[in-house]
Each structure stands twice: as structure tokens, then as C-alpha cells.
Image (tube, rainbow, N blue to C red):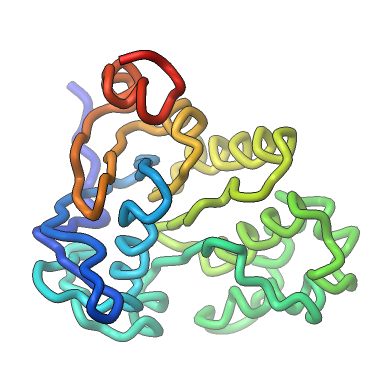
Length: 241
């Protein structure tokens, strides 16, 4: 009998808003250790708001967010990140005039002591970043910038890695390379919460998924179950219902 994996993130009945706009309502989900959980849905469906709420950026109106068993609802973003959550934000969030190396160093802001081994690990994983470590981040290709954003998020060895629309704006070849990197991280045991409009790719690599529609979770299940669901196939995978 397989051993049950521990719970990393548990969101219960969470409602959050931006200003007067209610973005997610009564959302409940969980992510277990070593899982890749996909959030799929159209632009504006609430996926990014969920990630922002976990980070403490979008204020929770009601409900709870627990990380590693601890209630982090209402905590500061800085303390949430320091507790072991990293994010690859939509649009990458790089500082384009700073070098590759400087952007990576920012990712280790909460790491105590020497970060040399973290940099070595990043450069071993992404050799192109080692070759371009003195180059301004803004001069990299789109795929290389996404690689840098991912490497920066991994600098703190997070217990939970969240990725918000990582394939957005990438060429098809770069999208394939990105998902191969995500799959490698999963195989290494990294716990990942992935928000992604490319539902086909997300479900190809995920263990489980949640389908967001207009601020609510409409469906959930294993990746295989969602891929076979007629509504998901029609709305997100280009099939027929």
C-alpha cells in the first residue's frame, strides 16, 4: 500500500478580491508533497488571484490558507515567502537592467549564509544562465528569461513552487522545453502548483487539476479524469463535447 504524502498547501472556502471585484469565491483545494497540481481555466477565471491570495497579495475576505500545517491567512508576503513558498510570476518579474547573476542573488534573499552552492546548482541545471551570468536579464530570449525566472524561484529551495502562466508568450519550442524542465523538477520531488492557460500541456504533466470558471472551481480530479471529461475537452482541449 502506497504511503500517503503529507499535505503542503490546504485552502478552505477562500474568497478574495481586488478592490470591489470579487475574484474568487469559496475556493477549496489542496496540494500534497511531491505533487504537480494544475489550475486551468480562461484568462480572468481566478487562477492568478488564487496564487496572489496564497502569497498574501490579494487579501482574503473569508476562508483559510494553511501551509505545512500552519495558518498563513493574513500573513505578510515577506513572511509567507520566508516560510518556504516561491513563485514564478506571470510576466516573469525579472529586473531587466540587472544581470542574470544579480537576479539569481535576489532569489536567495531569505537564504541565510553563503549562497554559492545555490548558485552552482542553478548554473548546473541551466548551463545557458552560467554562460550569460554577466548579461542583463532583459537581453535574454523569452525562453531564457523564463528559465531565469524559474532558476531564481528555486534559489531558496522552496517547499512549494508556484508558477503563474509560465508558457505565456513563449514560442512552441520554448514551451516544450519549459514543460520538460517542470517535469524534471517534479521527478526530483519538487511540489508544484501550476496556473496555466495551456490546459493540454498542464494536464499532460500534472497529477491532479482544478478547473476555474468565473472565480469558482467547477471541476477537480486527476489529470487523466479531467483530460477525459467532455466539458474540459470541449472548452480547453479543442475537442467536442
